[in-house]
Length: 183
Image (cartoon, rainbow, N blue to C red; front, side, top):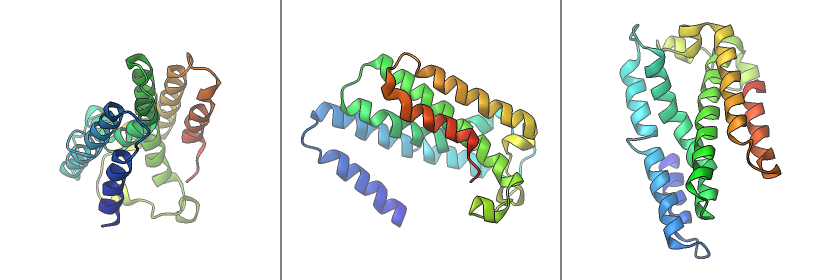
């Protein structure tokens, strides 16, 4: 219920911003709805649940799951401010690509940490994916290739922001944190 309440509040908060043009507010509301609905989080979760216990899950399916479950929420988080300010399509495209890349990298690192960390280090239960018979990036690629792929996604995300001025620094720091995190 807490998640439902927070999601409802997000829509309420966006809709009550009177200093932002209504057209821009509607873009953010639509993007948030898409990110959490069947085309985003819910859709990814459905495919994730349907994939449990199946041995033939491909990298494409795993990418689909996590681009929808994880990256979609990061994407709307990263792009909402730009939408509110009326950013053009080119800026939004770069921010979307950045967010999709760090979202997927975040999930790959999460999968790695689930098998390489202790519960004390991670601050949550470990080994849940293996117990649920979920396909993970390390189960498909191995640990070293998973680390390489995560780093490659972070580098691509940072390249997406190269044309921005120094206002990109917080986003670059977030990208670097993705592969450096230990919990």
